[in-house]
Length: 205
Image (tube, rainbow, N blue to C red; front, side, top):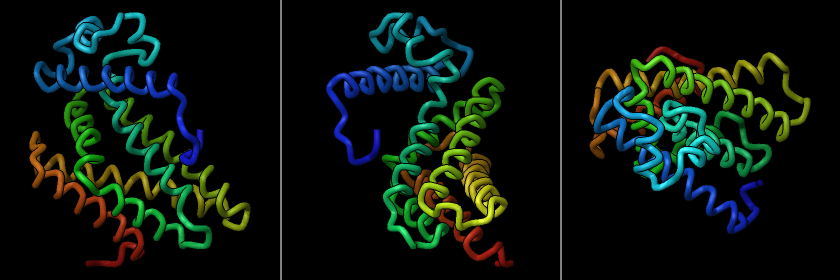
């Protein structure tokens, strides 16, 4: 479904169920830590059956990392809506500025925070970044055709994702466990700063 299509009632219901599972999983992760609850606990908290849970996620760790996938997919949709002819890095920075709002960043920040130190959850986080990198390559090709060198496209997509991860890692080191608005504001600043460094060619500050 493209960003201009209106979702059906069935799609909206599925999205609501998925979101209720994610919210329940995130709450349990904050209260008990990863490993302190089961899929059954998540299902009960979300008001769904165990079978319904597995219709959406393969594990508790995957449910916990879902906000990262959502944030990255939202950014990708915004990229596709940027005007053709706009420099690629400018498109990325404008998207980030549009998403640098606590409402969008908080779920991803929570996901990154509770996943830290948990190997299965970290693998899903890395999978989200890898999948988004591949989608960025496809989106660039969709917008620019074959006019850009293959190495350039892949290097740009990889650099974009590396900058995002760098901002999250620095934020976690600075504000470990802090999800206050001021902390999320700092994450927004770090994300914008990371992409500004990319745009400048990593010229020395």
